[in-house]
Amino acid sequence: MSPVTKKFLLLCVLAVLSVNNVLGKVHVKITNSLTNKLDLTIHCKSEDDDLGVHLLHPNESFSFQFKRKFFGGTLFYCSFQWNNELYRFDIYKQTRDVQAGDDFNWSIKESGPCVTIVYSTQPFCHPWNPKFLM
Image 1 (cartoon, helix red, strand yellow):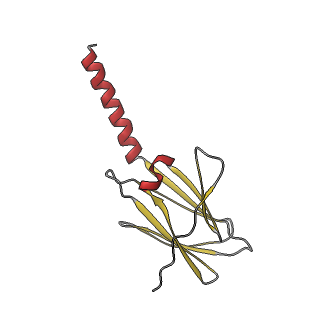
Image 2 (cartoon, one colour):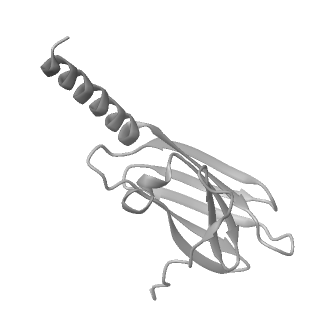
Image 3 (cartoon, one colour):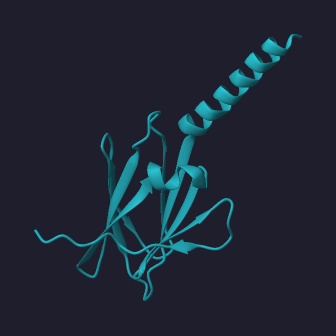
């Protein structure tokens, strides 16, 4: 096999792996980890999809999956409500999360959402999105 053919094949393999990384399915799991046995109401959306409203009892989960946009910009955002308090968070943001893999396990706590990804056993906790006055 000529060196040019080898380089071409290597380039093709790298292109396929890159496309698979971008177009592979992302799995998101959201678990109600609120204290005091509180129920959690969630509503997740993207630019293209509305996943509906879901009531999660303590330790219950809601899961969904999707494919990333090829040119970037995939965003799923959710609202979280308990005890008449409303919070928002970008549960998947391609610019933030693309390098973290395809599986995101979120635990929703009063202090904010915490994620555990495949490459880490320790959760990483985020603050809630800023509240907007309406």
